[in-house]
Image (tube, rainbow over all chains, first blue to last red; front, side, top):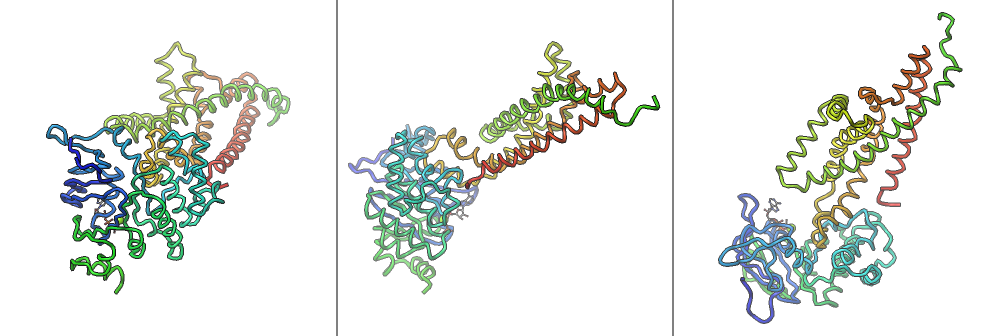
Length: 263
Length: 219
Ligand SMILES: Nc1ncnc2c1ncn2[C@@H]1O[C@H](COP(=O)(O)OP(=O)(O)OP(=O)(O)O)[C@@H](O)[C@H]1O
Ligand SMILES: [Mg+2]
Protein backbone atom coordinates (compact mmCIF):
# COMPACT_ATOMS: atom_id res chain seq x y z
CA UNK A 1 0.00 0.00 0.00
CA UNK A 2 1.17 3.48 -0.77
CA UNK A 3 0.81 5.33 2.50
CA UNK A 4 2.07 8.62 3.74
CA UNK A 5 4.12 7.86 6.84
CA UNK A 6 4.22 11.33 8.36
CA UNK A 7 2.11 11.58 11.51
CA UNK A 8 -0.41 14.04 10.19
CA UNK A 9 -1.79 12.83 6.90
CA UNK A 10 -2.63 15.58 4.44
CA UNK A 11 -6.34 16.01 3.80
CA UNK A 12 -5.83 15.57 0.07
CA UNK A 13 -2.81 14.28 -1.77
CA UNK A 14 -2.50 13.99 -5.55
CA UNK A 15 0.23 11.58 -6.57
CA UNK A 16 1.26 11.43 -10.23
CA UNK A 17 -2.30 12.12 -11.30
CA UNK A 18 -3.12 11.81 -14.99
CA UNK A 19 -6.44 12.68 -16.47
CA UNK A 20 -7.33 12.55 -20.15
CA UNK A 21 -10.58 12.84 -22.03
CA UNK A 22 -9.89 10.69 -25.06
CA UNK A 23 -6.68 11.99 -26.58
CA UNK A 24 -6.92 15.26 -24.71
CA UNK A 25 -4.55 15.24 -21.74
CA UNK A 26 -5.93 17.56 -19.07
CA UNK A 27 -3.74 16.68 -16.09
CA UNK A 28 -0.25 15.27 -16.57
CA UNK A 29 1.64 13.82 -13.61
CA UNK A 30 0.12 16.23 -11.15
CA UNK A 31 1.41 16.23 -7.57
CA UNK A 32 0.17 18.41 -4.77
CA UNK A 33 -1.11 18.19 -1.24
CA UNK A 34 -3.68 20.07 0.76
CA UNK A 35 -3.14 19.95 4.50
CA UNK A 36 -5.90 19.62 7.05
CA UNK A 37 -7.62 22.91 7.64
CA UNK A 38 -6.05 24.49 4.57
CA UNK A 39 -8.11 26.76 2.39
CA UNK A 40 -6.63 26.39 -1.04
CA UNK A 41 -7.81 28.41 -4.01
CA UNK A 42 -7.15 27.20 -7.52
CA UNK A 43 -6.83 29.89 -10.15
CA UNK A 44 -5.95 29.70 -13.81
CA UNK A 45 -7.30 30.24 -17.29
CA UNK A 46 -10.37 28.48 -18.63
CA UNK A 47 -9.65 24.87 -19.53
CA UNK A 48 -6.61 24.61 -17.26
CA UNK A 49 -8.20 21.71 -15.34
CA UNK A 50 -9.47 23.31 -12.12
CA UNK A 51 -12.92 21.79 -12.29
CA UNK A 52 -11.44 18.45 -13.30
CA UNK A 53 -9.34 18.41 -10.13
CA UNK A 54 -12.40 18.99 -7.93
CA UNK A 55 -14.45 16.43 -9.83
CA UNK A 56 -11.70 13.84 -9.42
CA UNK A 57 -11.69 14.40 -5.66
CA UNK A 58 -15.48 14.03 -5.60
CA UNK A 59 -15.17 10.84 -7.73
CA UNK A 60 -17.31 12.40 -10.45
CA UNK A 61 -14.51 11.66 -12.92
CA UNK A 62 -12.40 8.54 -13.18
CA UNK A 63 -8.61 8.88 -12.85
CA UNK A 64 -6.63 7.94 -15.95
CA UNK A 65 -3.48 7.36 -13.92
CA UNK A 66 -1.98 7.94 -10.49
CA UNK A 67 -3.54 8.14 -7.06
CA UNK A 68 -5.53 10.45 -4.85
CA UNK A 69 -5.33 10.05 -1.09
CA UNK A 70 -7.87 11.46 1.33
CA UNK A 71 -6.54 11.55 4.86
CA UNK A 72 -3.89 9.08 3.76
CA UNK A 73 -6.48 6.63 2.41
CA UNK A 74 -6.55 5.84 -1.29
CA UNK A 75 -9.73 7.20 -2.88
CA UNK A 76 -10.32 5.24 -6.07
CA UNK A 77 -7.05 3.47 -6.86
CA UNK A 78 -4.22 2.00 -4.84
CA UNK A 79 -0.82 0.45 -5.47
CA UNK A 80 -0.79 -3.13 -4.25
CA UNK A 81 2.07 -5.56 -4.92
CA UNK A 82 3.41 -3.18 -7.53
CA UNK A 83 0.10 -3.06 -9.40
CA UNK A 84 -2.35 -0.22 -9.67
CA UNK A 85 -5.72 -1.57 -8.62
CA UNK A 86 -9.14 -0.04 -8.78
CA UNK A 87 -10.94 0.11 -5.44
CA UNK A 88 -14.49 -1.12 -4.93
CA UNK A 89 -17.49 1.17 -4.97
CA UNK A 90 -18.10 0.36 -1.30
CA UNK A 91 -14.65 1.64 -0.34
CA UNK A 92 -15.03 4.75 -2.50
CA UNK A 93 -18.31 5.52 -0.83
CA UNK A 94 -16.78 5.31 2.64
CA UNK A 95 -14.04 7.77 1.73
CA UNK A 96 -16.46 9.97 -0.22
CA UNK A 97 -18.58 10.55 2.89
CA UNK A 98 -15.87 12.86 4.22
CA UNK A 99 -16.05 15.08 1.17
CA UNK A 100 -18.74 17.60 0.29
CA UNK A 101 -19.19 19.65 -2.83
CA UNK A 102 -21.10 22.77 -3.80
CA UNK A 103 -21.77 23.16 -7.51
CA UNK A 104 -21.99 26.15 -9.78
CA UNK A 105 -25.56 25.17 -10.73
CA UNK A 106 -26.63 24.40 -7.10
CA UNK A 107 -28.07 21.00 -8.10
CA UNK A 108 -30.68 20.96 -5.37
CA UNK A 109 -33.28 18.21 -5.72
CA UNK A 110 -36.33 20.06 -7.08
CA UNK A 111 -38.72 17.30 -6.02
CA UNK A 112 -37.90 17.84 -2.34
CA UNK A 113 -38.46 20.78 -0.04
CA UNK A 114 -35.50 22.72 1.32
CA UNK A 115 -35.40 20.77 4.56
CA UNK A 116 -35.85 17.44 2.78
CA UNK A 117 -32.85 18.31 0.61
CA UNK A 118 -30.76 18.93 3.70
CA UNK A 119 -31.76 15.87 5.75
CA UNK A 120 -31.78 13.42 2.81
CA UNK A 121 -28.17 12.27 3.09
CA UNK A 122 -27.75 12.56 6.87
CA UNK A 123 -30.81 10.32 7.35
CA UNK A 124 -30.28 7.84 4.53
CA UNK A 125 -26.49 7.75 4.27
CA UNK A 126 -25.24 8.53 7.78
CA UNK A 127 -28.36 6.99 9.40
CA UNK A 128 -28.82 9.93 11.74
CA UNK A 129 -32.26 9.79 13.44
CA UNK A 130 -34.67 11.98 11.51
CA UNK A 131 -35.55 14.30 14.39
CA UNK A 132 -31.88 14.93 15.07
CA UNK A 133 -31.23 15.58 11.38
CA UNK A 134 -34.08 18.09 11.30
CA UNK A 135 -32.74 19.94 14.33
CA UNK A 136 -29.33 20.17 12.71
CA UNK A 137 -30.83 21.21 9.36
CA UNK A 138 -32.68 24.06 11.09
CA UNK A 139 -29.47 25.24 12.73
CA UNK A 140 -27.77 25.24 9.34
CA UNK A 141 -30.67 27.04 7.66
CA UNK A 142 -30.45 29.64 10.37
CA UNK A 143 -26.73 29.94 9.76
CA UNK A 144 -27.25 30.59 6.03
CA UNK A 145 -30.08 33.01 6.77
CA UNK A 146 -32.97 30.91 5.45
CA UNK A 147 -34.70 29.76 8.63
CA UNK A 148 -38.08 30.74 7.20
CA UNK A 149 -37.66 28.73 3.98
CA UNK A 150 -37.54 25.17 5.26
CA UNK A 151 -40.79 24.15 3.55
CA UNK A 152 -40.15 26.03 0.33
CA UNK A 153 -39.32 24.16 -2.86
CA UNK A 154 -35.95 25.00 -4.41
CA UNK A 155 -37.47 26.41 -7.59
CA UNK A 156 -39.40 28.96 -5.52
CA UNK A 157 -36.11 30.43 -4.29
CA UNK A 158 -33.71 32.89 -5.88
CA UNK A 159 -30.36 31.63 -7.12
CA UNK A 160 -28.56 33.04 -4.12
CA UNK A 161 -31.01 31.36 -1.75
CA UNK A 162 -30.70 28.05 -3.60
CA UNK A 163 -26.95 28.19 -3.36
CA UNK A 164 -27.14 28.89 0.38
CA UNK A 165 -29.39 25.84 0.77
CA UNK A 166 -26.82 23.83 -1.22
CA UNK A 167 -24.11 24.98 1.19
CA UNK A 168 -26.28 23.95 4.15
CA UNK A 169 -26.93 20.59 2.49
CA UNK A 170 -23.20 19.96 2.05
CA UNK A 171 -22.44 21.03 5.63
CA UNK A 172 -25.15 18.74 7.01
CA UNK A 173 -22.90 15.80 6.15
CA UNK A 174 -20.16 17.26 8.40
CA UNK A 175 -17.55 16.95 5.68
CA UNK A 176 -13.85 17.16 6.47
CA UNK A 177 -13.27 18.54 2.99
CA UNK A 178 -15.48 20.99 1.12
CA UNK A 179 -15.10 21.52 -2.62
CA UNK A 180 -16.42 24.78 -4.08
CA UNK A 181 -16.44 25.12 -7.85
CA UNK A 182 -17.28 28.66 -8.95
CA UNK A 183 -20.26 28.67 -6.64
CA UNK A 184 -21.21 32.25 -7.48
CA UNK A 185 -20.69 32.15 -11.24
CA UNK A 186 -24.33 31.40 -12.02
CA UNK A 187 -25.61 34.22 -9.80
CA UNK A 188 -26.61 37.77 -10.58
CA UNK A 189 -23.86 40.16 -9.43
CA UNK A 190 -26.00 41.73 -6.70
CA UNK A 191 -26.53 38.41 -4.89
CA UNK A 192 -22.98 37.08 -5.13
CA UNK A 193 -22.21 38.87 -1.87
CA UNK A 194 -24.77 37.05 0.26
CA UNK A 195 -23.37 33.67 -0.77
CA UNK A 196 -19.75 34.67 -0.25
CA UNK A 197 -20.64 36.08 3.17
CA UNK A 198 -22.05 32.69 4.19
CA UNK A 199 -18.87 30.99 2.99
CA UNK A 200 -16.66 33.47 4.85
CA UNK A 201 -18.65 32.62 7.96
CA UNK A 202 -18.15 28.87 7.35
CA UNK A 203 -14.43 29.47 6.92
CA UNK A 204 -14.30 31.49 10.15
CA UNK A 205 -16.31 29.12 12.31
CA UNK A 206 -15.15 25.67 11.16
CA UNK A 207 -11.87 23.93 10.46
CA UNK A 208 -13.11 22.27 7.27
CA UNK A 209 -10.44 21.85 4.61
CA UNK A 210 -11.51 23.79 1.53
CA UNK A 211 -10.54 23.49 -2.09
CA UNK A 212 -11.93 26.47 -3.92
CA UNK A 213 -12.19 27.48 -7.55
CA UNK A 214 -13.33 31.07 -7.91
CA UNK A 215 -13.01 34.18 -10.00
CA UNK A 216 -13.79 36.30 -6.95
CA UNK A 217 -10.26 37.35 -6.11
CA UNK A 218 -11.19 39.35 -3.02
CA UNK A 219 -13.01 36.32 -1.63
CA UNK A 220 -9.98 34.15 -2.40
CA UNK A 221 -7.77 36.62 -0.54
CA UNK A 222 -10.07 36.72 2.45
CA UNK A 223 -10.62 33.01 2.82
CA UNK A 224 -7.64 31.10 1.53
CA UNK A 225 -4.19 30.62 2.98
CA UNK A 226 -2.71 29.20 -0.22
CA UNK A 227 -3.30 29.90 -3.88
CA UNK A 228 -2.28 27.58 -6.69
CA UNK A 229 -1.99 28.99 -10.17
CA UNK A 230 -2.69 26.38 -12.86
CA UNK A 231 -2.07 26.41 -16.54
CA UNK A 232 -2.52 23.49 -18.93
CA UNK A 233 -3.00 21.07 -16.07
CA UNK A 234 0.11 21.81 -14.07
CA UNK A 235 0.96 24.14 -11.23
CA UNK A 236 2.66 27.29 -12.47
CA UNK A 237 3.04 29.01 -9.15
CA UNK A 238 2.09 28.53 -5.53
CA UNK A 239 1.96 31.29 -2.95
CA UNK A 240 0.03 32.89 -0.14
CA UNK A 241 -2.83 35.07 -1.39
CA UNK A 242 -0.98 38.26 -0.39
CA UNK A 243 2.00 37.34 -2.52
CA UNK A 244 0.04 35.79 -5.36
CA UNK A 245 -2.25 38.75 -5.86
CA UNK A 246 0.29 41.52 -5.35
CA UNK A 247 3.70 40.28 -6.46
CA UNK A 248 3.47 37.01 -8.39
CA UNK A 249 6.75 35.64 -9.67
CA UNK A 250 5.63 34.05 -12.92
CA UNK A 251 4.81 36.01 -16.03
CA UNK A 252 1.90 33.66 -16.79
CA UNK A 253 0.38 34.41 -13.40
CA UNK A 254 0.79 38.16 -13.97
CA UNK A 255 -0.86 37.92 -17.39
CA UNK A 256 -3.71 35.85 -16.01
CA UNK A 257 -4.35 38.16 -13.06
CA UNK A 258 -4.17 41.21 -15.27
CA UNK A 259 -6.81 39.70 -17.53
CA UNK A 260 -9.08 38.65 -14.65
CA UNK A 261 -8.76 41.84 -12.67
CA UNK A 262 -9.25 43.83 -15.85
CA UNK A 263 -6.22 46.06 -15.36
CA UNK B 1 -88.52 -6.25 -41.09
CA UNK B 2 -89.03 -3.05 -43.00
CA UNK B 3 -91.10 -1.59 -40.18
CA UNK B 4 -88.12 -1.85 -37.82
CA UNK B 5 -87.31 1.68 -36.52
CA UNK B 6 -83.80 3.06 -36.83
CA UNK B 7 -83.54 3.34 -33.05
CA UNK B 8 -85.45 1.09 -30.68
CA UNK B 9 -85.44 2.37 -27.09
CA UNK B 10 -86.66 -0.93 -25.65
CA UNK B 11 -83.78 -2.79 -27.24
CA UNK B 12 -81.37 -0.11 -26.04
CA UNK B 13 -82.53 -0.47 -22.43
CA UNK B 14 -82.37 -4.23 -22.70
CA UNK B 15 -78.82 -4.37 -24.03
CA UNK B 16 -77.34 -1.65 -21.81
CA UNK B 17 -76.90 -3.78 -18.63
CA UNK B 18 -75.27 -6.54 -20.67
CA UNK B 19 -72.86 -4.06 -22.20
CA UNK B 20 -72.05 -2.45 -18.88
CA UNK B 21 -71.35 -5.81 -17.34
CA UNK B 22 -68.92 -6.77 -20.12
CA UNK B 23 -67.42 -3.32 -19.97
CA UNK B 24 -66.72 -3.44 -16.26
CA UNK B 25 -65.70 -7.06 -15.88
CA UNK B 26 -63.49 -7.21 -18.95
CA UNK B 27 -62.68 -3.89 -20.64
CA UNK B 28 -62.13 -1.86 -17.48
CA UNK B 29 -60.61 -4.77 -15.63
CA UNK B 30 -58.02 -5.38 -18.34
CA UNK B 31 -57.28 -1.67 -18.71
CA UNK B 32 -56.69 -1.16 -14.99
CA UNK B 33 -54.69 -4.31 -14.31
CA UNK B 34 -52.68 -4.15 -17.54
CA UNK B 35 -51.95 -0.45 -17.04
CA UNK B 36 -50.58 -1.25 -13.63
CA UNK B 37 -48.43 -4.07 -15.03
CA UNK B 38 -47.27 -1.86 -17.91
CA UNK B 39 -46.43 1.09 -15.64
CA UNK B 40 -44.39 -1.01 -13.23
CA UNK B 41 -42.73 -3.28 -15.78
CA UNK B 42 -42.04 -0.32 -18.05
CA UNK B 43 -40.21 1.48 -15.26
CA UNK B 44 -38.23 -1.64 -14.37
CA UNK B 45 -37.22 -2.05 -18.03
CA UNK B 46 -36.20 1.60 -18.31
CA UNK B 47 -34.06 1.46 -15.17
CA UNK B 48 -32.57 -1.89 -16.16
CA UNK B 49 -31.61 -0.50 -19.55
CA UNK B 50 -29.95 2.50 -17.99
CA UNK B 51 -28.04 0.66 -15.27
CA UNK B 52 -27.13 -2.73 -16.80
CA UNK B 53 -23.94 -3.61 -18.65
CA UNK B 54 -24.11 -2.88 -22.37
CA UNK B 55 -24.99 -6.42 -23.68
CA UNK B 56 -27.91 -6.79 -21.27
CA UNK B 57 -29.27 -3.35 -21.98
CA UNK B 58 -28.94 -3.99 -25.73
CA UNK B 59 -30.84 -7.25 -25.35
CA UNK B 60 -33.65 -5.54 -23.44
CA UNK B 61 -33.77 -2.90 -26.18
CA UNK B 62 -33.96 -5.52 -28.92
CA UNK B 63 -36.76 -7.51 -27.27
CA UNK B 64 -38.70 -4.29 -26.55
CA UNK B 65 -38.43 -3.28 -30.19
CA UNK B 66 -39.66 -6.65 -31.41
CA UNK B 67 -42.68 -6.38 -29.12
CA UNK B 68 -43.45 -2.81 -30.12
CA UNK B 69 -43.04 -3.48 -33.83
CA UNK B 70 -45.54 -6.35 -34.01
CA UNK B 71 -49.33 -5.96 -33.73
CA UNK B 72 -50.87 -6.74 -30.37
CA UNK B 73 -53.40 -9.07 -32.03
CA UNK B 74 -50.56 -11.25 -33.27
CA UNK B 75 -49.10 -11.37 -29.77
CA UNK B 76 -52.47 -12.19 -28.25
CA UNK B 77 -53.04 -15.06 -30.70
CA UNK B 78 -49.46 -16.26 -30.30
CA UNK B 79 -49.79 -16.52 -26.52
CA UNK B 80 -53.31 -17.96 -26.85
CA UNK B 81 -52.13 -20.86 -29.03
CA UNK B 82 -49.03 -21.53 -26.93
CA UNK B 83 -50.84 -21.54 -23.61
CA UNK B 84 -54.00 -23.34 -24.69
CA UNK B 85 -54.84 -24.30 -21.13
CA UNK B 86 -54.60 -20.78 -19.79
CA UNK B 87 -57.59 -18.56 -19.12
CA UNK B 88 -57.88 -16.26 -22.21
CA UNK B 89 -58.64 -13.26 -19.99
CA UNK B 90 -55.42 -13.85 -18.07
CA UNK B 91 -53.48 -14.08 -21.33
CA UNK B 92 -55.09 -10.82 -22.40
CA UNK B 93 -54.14 -9.02 -19.21
CA UNK B 94 -50.52 -10.19 -19.39
CA UNK B 95 -50.04 -9.50 -23.10
CA UNK B 96 -51.57 -6.04 -22.83
CA UNK B 97 -49.36 -5.38 -19.81
CA UNK B 98 -46.17 -6.48 -21.56
CA UNK B 99 -47.00 -4.82 -24.88
CA UNK B 100 -47.68 -1.46 -23.32
CA UNK B 101 -44.75 -1.82 -20.89
CA UNK B 102 -42.45 -1.57 -23.89
CA UNK B 103 -44.10 1.69 -24.93
CA UNK B 104 -44.12 3.08 -21.42
CA UNK B 105 -40.47 2.17 -20.89
CA UNK B 106 -39.59 4.46 -23.81
CA UNK B 107 -41.52 7.24 -22.12
CA UNK B 108 -39.75 6.63 -18.82
CA UNK B 109 -36.43 6.46 -20.63
CA UNK B 110 -36.94 9.90 -22.12
CA UNK B 111 -37.98 11.16 -18.68
CA UNK B 112 -34.91 9.63 -17.04
CA UNK B 113 -32.58 11.05 -19.71
CA UNK B 114 -34.14 14.47 -19.18
CA UNK B 115 -33.04 14.55 -15.52
CA UNK B 116 -29.92 16.76 -15.58
CA UNK B 117 -26.53 15.13 -14.94
CA UNK B 118 -26.13 17.56 -12.02
CA UNK B 119 -28.77 15.62 -10.10
CA UNK B 120 -26.72 12.42 -10.33
CA UNK B 121 -23.61 14.36 -9.37
CA UNK B 122 -25.27 15.94 -6.34
CA UNK B 123 -26.40 12.47 -5.24
CA UNK B 124 -22.84 11.17 -5.60
CA UNK B 125 -21.46 14.16 -3.71
CA UNK B 126 -23.84 13.26 -0.88
CA UNK B 127 -22.70 9.60 -1.02
CA UNK B 128 -26.25 8.46 -1.72
CA UNK B 129 -26.63 4.83 -2.75
CA UNK B 130 -27.63 4.00 -6.34
CA UNK B 131 -30.92 2.63 -5.12
CA UNK B 132 -31.76 5.71 -3.10
CA UNK B 133 -30.66 7.99 -5.95
CA UNK B 134 -33.06 6.23 -8.32
CA UNK B 135 -35.88 6.11 -5.80
CA UNK B 136 -35.69 9.54 -4.21
CA UNK B 137 -34.17 11.72 -6.92
CA UNK B 138 -34.28 10.36 -10.46
CA UNK B 139 -37.58 8.48 -10.69
CA UNK B 140 -39.71 11.18 -9.02
CA UNK B 141 -38.31 13.78 -11.41
CA UNK B 142 -38.60 11.52 -14.43
CA UNK B 143 -42.21 10.63 -13.55
CA UNK B 144 -43.32 14.20 -13.36
CA UNK B 145 -42.56 14.73 -17.03
CA UNK B 146 -43.97 11.38 -18.12
CA UNK B 147 -47.46 11.33 -16.60
CA UNK B 148 -49.26 12.89 -19.59
CA UNK B 149 -47.63 10.51 -22.06
CA UNK B 150 -48.27 7.49 -19.84
CA UNK B 151 -51.89 8.58 -19.50
CA UNK B 152 -52.25 8.68 -23.25
CA UNK B 153 -51.00 5.10 -23.48
CA UNK B 154 -53.58 4.05 -20.89
CA UNK B 155 -56.32 5.57 -23.03
CA UNK B 156 -54.83 3.98 -26.12
CA UNK B 157 -54.73 0.58 -24.40
CA UNK B 158 -58.33 1.08 -23.31
CA UNK B 159 -59.34 1.52 -26.94
CA UNK B 160 -57.27 -1.51 -27.98
CA UNK B 161 -59.13 -3.87 -25.64
CA UNK B 162 -61.60 -4.99 -28.38
CA UNK B 163 -58.68 -6.94 -29.85
CA UNK B 164 -59.41 -9.39 -27.04
CA UNK B 165 -62.17 -10.69 -29.34
CA UNK B 166 -59.42 -12.50 -31.23
CA UNK B 167 -58.82 -14.76 -28.25
CA UNK B 168 -62.54 -15.34 -27.51
CA UNK B 169 -62.78 -12.94 -24.57
CA UNK B 170 -66.21 -11.33 -24.41
CA UNK B 171 -65.39 -7.70 -23.84
CA UNK B 172 -67.93 -4.98 -24.51
CA UNK B 173 -67.75 -4.87 -28.33
CA UNK B 174 -68.07 -8.63 -28.54
CA UNK B 175 -71.05 -8.48 -26.17
CA UNK B 176 -72.68 -5.87 -28.40
CA UNK B 177 -72.06 -7.97 -31.50
CA UNK B 178 -73.49 -11.08 -29.90
CA UNK B 179 -76.59 -9.27 -28.69
CA UNK B 180 -77.01 -7.57 -32.08
CA UNK B 181 -76.70 -10.89 -33.88
CA UNK B 182 -79.30 -12.50 -31.70
CA UNK B 183 -81.81 -9.65 -31.82
CA UNK B 184 -81.02 -7.87 -35.10
CA UNK B 185 -80.42 -4.61 -33.20
CA UNK B 186 -76.80 -3.86 -34.03
CA UNK B 187 -77.20 -0.10 -34.19
CA UNK B 188 -78.36 0.31 -30.59
CA UNK B 189 -75.74 -2.02 -29.17
CA UNK B 190 -72.84 -0.57 -31.12
CA UNK B 191 -73.88 3.05 -30.54
CA UNK B 192 -74.13 2.47 -26.82
CA UNK B 193 -70.76 0.76 -26.82
CA UNK B 194 -69.20 3.77 -28.50
CA UNK B 195 -70.87 6.06 -25.96
CA UNK B 196 -69.58 3.99 -23.07
CA UNK B 197 -66.02 4.31 -24.40
CA UNK B 198 -66.42 8.03 -24.96
CA UNK B 199 -67.95 8.77 -21.56
CA UNK B 200 -65.25 6.85 -19.72
CA UNK B 201 -62.29 8.31 -21.62
CA UNK B 202 -63.21 11.78 -20.50
CA UNK B 203 -62.95 11.24 -16.72
CA UNK B 204 -59.75 9.32 -17.33
CA UNK B 205 -58.17 12.34 -18.96
CA UNK B 206 -59.38 14.52 -16.06
CA UNK B 207 -57.75 12.09 -13.66
CA UNK B 208 -54.47 12.31 -15.55
CA UNK B 209 -54.60 16.10 -15.34
CA UNK B 210 -55.06 15.94 -11.57
CA UNK B 211 -52.22 13.49 -11.17
CA UNK B 212 -50.02 15.80 -13.20
CA UNK B 213 -50.79 18.66 -10.81
CA UNK B 214 -50.06 16.50 -7.78
CA UNK B 215 -46.65 15.63 -9.16
CA UNK B 216 -45.68 19.24 -9.83
CA UNK B 217 -42.80 20.58 -7.73
CA UNK B 218 -44.50 23.61 -6.31
CA UNK B 219 -47.81 23.79 -4.49
N1 LIG C 1 -16.39 15.51 -19.89
C1 LIG C 1 -15.41 16.02 -20.66
N2 LIG C 1 -15.16 15.53 -21.89
C2 LIG C 1 -14.19 16.02 -22.65
N3 LIG C 1 -13.37 17.03 -22.30
C3 LIG C 1 -13.56 17.57 -21.10
C4 LIG C 1 -14.60 17.10 -20.21
N4 LIG C 1 -14.54 17.83 -19.08
C5 LIG C 1 -13.55 18.71 -19.25
N5 LIG C 1 -12.96 18.57 -20.45
C6 LIG C 1 -11.82 19.34 -20.96
O1 LIG C 1 -10.80 19.34 -19.99
C7 LIG C 1 -10.16 20.59 -19.93
C8 LIG C 1 -10.18 21.10 -18.51
O2 LIG C 1 -11.50 21.41 -18.17
P1 LIG C 1 -11.91 22.01 -16.77
O3 LIG C 1 -13.38 22.11 -16.78
O4 LIG C 1 -11.29 21.22 -15.69
O5 LIG C 1 -11.26 23.45 -16.83
P2 LIG C 1 -11.43 24.67 -15.84
O6 LIG C 1 -10.07 25.05 -15.43
O7 LIG C 1 -12.40 24.34 -14.77
O8 LIG C 1 -12.03 25.77 -16.81
P3 LIG C 1 -13.12 26.93 -16.49
O9 LIG C 1 -12.36 28.04 -15.83
O10 LIG C 1 -13.61 27.31 -17.85
O11 LIG C 1 -14.18 26.34 -15.63
C9 LIG C 1 -10.86 21.48 -20.93
O12 LIG C 1 -10.10 21.52 -22.11
C10 LIG C 1 -12.17 20.79 -21.17
O13 LIG C 1 -12.61 21.02 -22.48
MG1 LIG D 1 -14.31 25.04 -14.24
